[in-house]
Length: 340
Ligand code: KG4
Ligand code: ZN
Image 1 (cartoon, protein in one colour):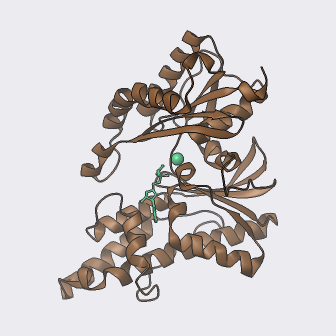
Image 2 (cartoon, protein in one colour; image 1 turned 135 degrees about the vertical axis):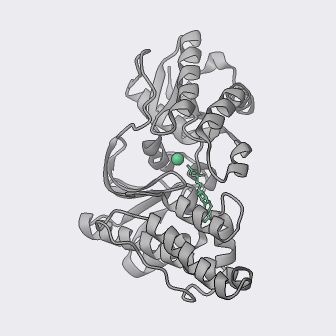
């Protein structure tokens, strides 16, 4: 079969997004995501509810992906699915569904590492998206992940820095919650931050390894700071929301940039690819642009729909593995703590 007629269905169910996508020769024909709104009222993802919602959503989402791509399931060449890391109950839904579909259609099954997929999303062919050159540094920043990876080839990746506690998206969301903003508060912090003074308030930057991250202390210092101020002035938050958000965002972005600078120094690699939901943040986008001019870095941020959890990134990895005939056995199991 020529590559031209190779259609891979990607399925993602590692956390709270049920997603399916079809890829053909690097081009995404459909990219469907059902985001589970049920978690909003709990202020975070509830694993039990997530698995249940995946089970509800997976068939309609796959149907929609095939329909939008305008292909029949019999035309599929392989099924690629997220094997891990992620929430076990969520992963089991996608894994079992993918196994059954591949078996029913008599086509290969391809297991995908979600973290590798965030990075390889940069190789999707899309307008305005230029694939990075090897070697490059990938920084994946979202509500579930914060890591810096040295990428020497498609499947040669080494984690050189990661969070020892919360993910950066959690730092945004938990700070937002302290300020009374709804979940997930990251985009709102960003919105207010754009009108505030980033130097208005100072928050400490936690000290860990040069390329590692820690965010739990930041959340605590925001909490103590806000409590103290509100004791003196009950309207402190509403009167200063823009400056508070700008100061929190400045601290986080500066911290991310410190870590990237350390990684560039350590590896000598100046090409940087960003992924994950937090890459939407205006602060990090501006800081990266500035670093291009100031330090000669080359930076990449994929289209936003390929940054957040999605199945297009699973499909591109599926396609890369399909070319190498790197297929999964039928007894493959989901892996909540899957490593590279
Ligand atoms: O990749 P994603 O959609 O899902 C996972 O966490 O896997 O990322 C969601 C995270 C949330 O924590 C959300 O608050 C954060 O990304 N986020 C932002 C922005 N947009 C999304 N954080 C800061 N600024 C933004 N503009
Ligand atoms: Zn993710």
